[in-house]
Length: 179
Image (cartoon, rainbow, N blue to C red; front, side, top):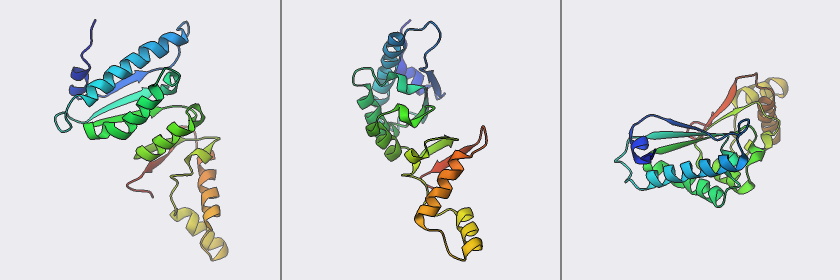
């Protein structure tokens, strides 16, 4: 059945697209169907003037599986930079930031205003947006030494927090409210 993706975007409900690989599902099929769906969604989003559509959220779980499809990584970078102007929010869900290229990491970190990061063994990827000041770490250092922490001590404290988050807890980062 043909799907009108403009109607999907205009309905006002979030769209959740799971792009993971399942048992018995060929990798090529995930790439083909997933890239086709995303291409149609992006075309629908870009074809309507901003302000004429209510805000919309697309959630892409395991999206990195598609990045080997021809030119799709470039489409993701374009979408990250432009979809907000069309009232479209794009949520990218992955288990490991190492699953995407450095270029896409930079694009994600540059264009995403909100991030939820769960416990990670690779917090170095997120150092670019960790806050410059953390009241708890500053207070703890001040009590201990009477001095504020150095930038490297602050960064080490924040990275330590990311590595020791309890299960099902996240570090929420909002560029508009960095504390």
